[in-house]
Image (cartoon, rainbow, N blue to C red; front, side, top):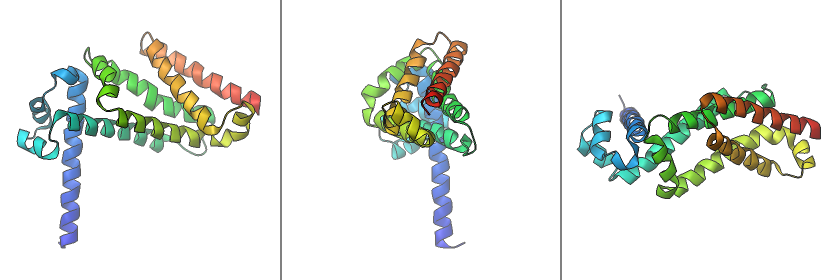
Length: 201
């Protein structure tokens, strides 16, 4: 095996180990909350030594930032892998909302401490939260780009419309009584958006 092959395998193994660690960290943070989760808890859940964990991440804040990025990338990958060009607008928005709104709501209500975690995320790492908004907006811009004319007729740019849809969807999570209620509201929100664009075309 060449040196390059060995380096590639080592890099892949390191990536797998980090993904396993961050997956464990996400579970710990969601179940126990930010304050109660310790580096020892994360190491134990990931099946690694504390030394290995500290070699990768020097403190809990860096683990949290990496975990937020890991979860964000997972949601983005889910959306992108399920979106298809031949889908209707309604189908594309459903794919987006299933991964972004419903999955977030599910994570937020995974345990009594999960809500505490989510409420403190913006204070802990605002940059990661801001980056997530940008990435979700980019996906929505691609979805709405084919309806540029209708969006312009409504007095918006595609970017503005994408941002409106994103922030509106965030509000649905706050107003939901439970998952079933949220699913109903999401369906209505998508139908309203699609109908508004159809009427403007």
